[in-house]
Image (cartoon, rainbow, N blue to C red; front, side):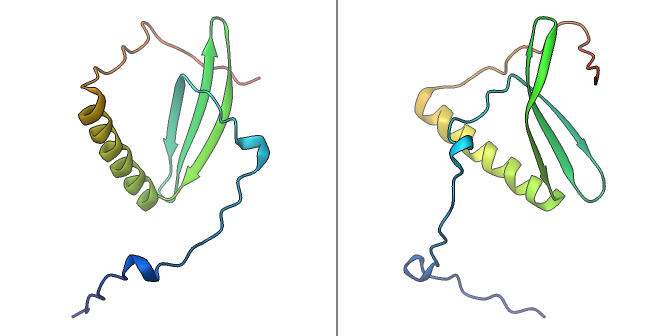
Length: 103
């Protein structure tokens, strides 16, 4: 039997300095994304797609366990957002098929 450790009080949490590179502070806009996975990792490509062209603006690679935690965090934050600002309807999916060509 595994014994559970009691939670660490917030006053004892370690503070970890976080570096935020200047080139990332503006963020990256994305209006589309593509997700692929293997047994070991998920790869998420965020894209800006416009009429007749598109570009990958960011790529995030993570473990399946971390992906599951990220999904839970996104769902919790969407719930909080909707409680504060009202319900949202999902955005409509693009009509037809969007095919991406790598050059």
